[in-house]
Image (cartoon, rainbow, N blue to C red):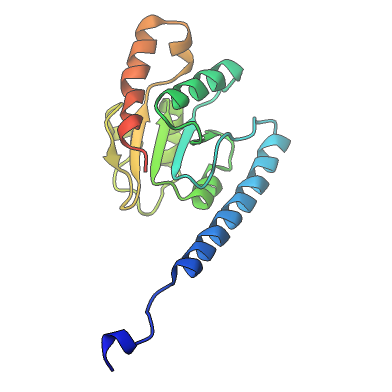
Length: 175
């Protein structure tokens, strides 16, 4: 049978779009459930869009000043919809499974430590061994980035410059 007479293989555009929409809805449902559990446990709700491929994990304690500064920083690098969640909640592994990030960012050493303690089976390199502000292959399909803590950067100029220098790496990494 000539190639033009064969039925198409793979998904058509509509089928592919429908599958992507189903995946988006499933992810949003899972993250909504996790968000509810976080709030019930006394943690702030995660911020951003869980299906955009960018996940930031912020070390505790997280207060309004930290979240406001992080939101402004994400806007400045063109990632206002990045998904922001928190270390030390007991739900991080489930959140990562639900969001399946292409770019995973540890904000502060507490977040890096918690990500490493998850013992992700496909992790190629621990966050603790990565240089701050230098992207690395975390898994085959995900880039990792370790950042300094944000809370000290709110009150100290040198910490602010250090954080911002490292944070700017996000500008070139977004999927």
